[in-house]
Length: 297
Image (cartoon, rainbow, N blue to C red; front, side, top):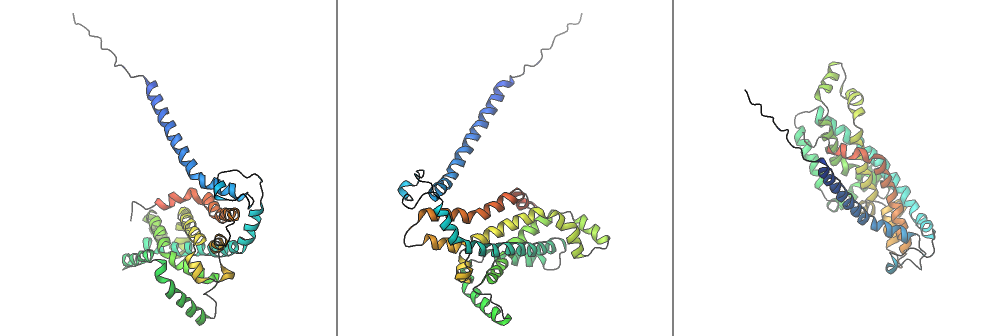
């Protein structure tokens, strides 16, 4: 007789402890994230609470206390002082970011899909522009603005157009880099197919490339809009009082002889709202467009 040895089925470890361990890890991560959020929101709490206090209560020793008397007087005064600067900032940031995106798209498209002899050298020279500090070009830039404005019969120095031009030119390197890295991810076969169909450079850009360029445009617009909105150095050097943007106006409020803390806090919140709106509207495209091409080209 042949002895049949019954094989015992392998024992499986209970799944309950594993699930419990996974839940514990999830709760730890959630608690840590909540703590980070609370720490991050502490300055926001101080800003909001102080902005609704009257001047008699707006004191550093009472920064954590809720207002005894809630008032929007600081918001009214802050808006009255900041309104011209906010208008000037929109006149600067909206056309400046759109022009920067358009020029960056053209440069990135040519450098990635319509290569020519010396394209890599030119791209390297573009990138060098990212490392030129603002302080190193201020005096030559002012002289250039004055001379070009006199030659063209327009006012570049002292107004918003000159400030837009400075930011657009200074933003060309980073905008070109972002678009060039993004366009590298577009298959070359699409470009070759459009050439076979008789499409030229601009037709290919309009019909093939631009429809899939949304994430790259979002990155550049967020980057340039935020940079222009938060700029202070160029604004001080290149504009006059009638063209000062929000940052200069905000500095003037903070630099008063007396310190109206509630007005400063309300003004800081008002000045940050446009950039927050831009991030909310375009933020979901930001990381996708920023990381596109990071492992290629």
